[in-house]
Image (cartoon, rainbow, N blue to C red):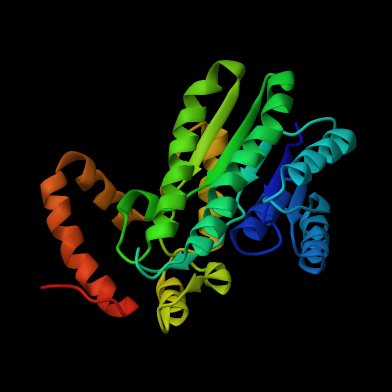
Length: 273
């Protein structure tokens, strides 16, 4: 059966990688994005890669946009099988430095954007008796490094929502996957807000050094939907650290403190020895 997939933020980065990965399997892929020019380009790429592409302008800050996207996909393809809540932005800064406006901006996109996606498509999934949500969180929501306050909170919110919905919707035939990558090669830093000098350059360096690509993460996500697994943790080192946090919290706290001092030094913050 040909899969029908909707991806927010599908015109670039991980969203684009996911669109093209599903296109390789011949899927029908609708990408929702705020960039019409890039979106039209990826629509063509999907068609070239073997899928059926469809772009719709969609801002995850508006529930009506997501409802329109849902209605358009249902009208065009008769339903939807996978909804990937991928659109997101980045921020860096301490509790003192980050403005309330920046807190509201990132929570509105990273948390409420996912909430809106789930809210808009849940009735359709229930009507079908099946469907899968893939919510893109981050290791930042599990590991909680300093100077990433608002970003950490936003991604922890996505994790909490995903765990909740996994229980809430399971008996309706709806699967939920929660994706928590660490640094990988993507364009997330291009939207970053921060008052820390040079932070975008430092984050870009960490992303470029990663051996994990957006295509690698996309492959893990497709597998998680097929296998109906909840956690998608693509990075081996961070996956081990998360296990340490769960099973040996004191050891994790000591290691995290050492890592945090190095991280704060790179980010331009001050850490006490």
